[in-house]
Image 1 (cartoon, one colour):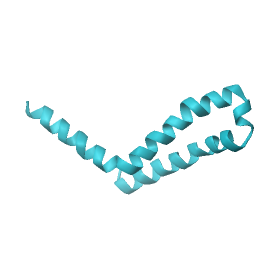
Image 2: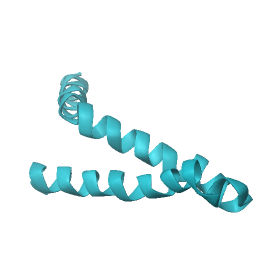
Image 3: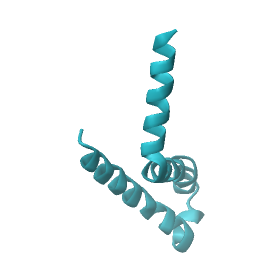
Image 4: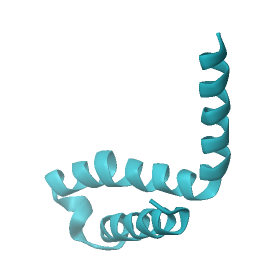
Amino acid sequence: MKPSTERKVIRWVHILFSIPVVGYLYGPVATIPQAAFVTRWVFFPIIVLSGIWLWKGQWLKKYFQKKKSEHAKE
């Protein structure tokens, strides 16, 4: 996958999974136990991870490539 396509996909995942969080904050989602659980423990962690990947993804890729190549030399 090209880096630009990967970034677009991750950006859309980040945006779409943010919608339930907005519903949790401003709507009735917080009063529905199942929806509140899914929002807290599924959607929010995905939003955090995709945001970190959008922010520091290039650095993480370089870091893991370096570790992988160092490990292969041993």
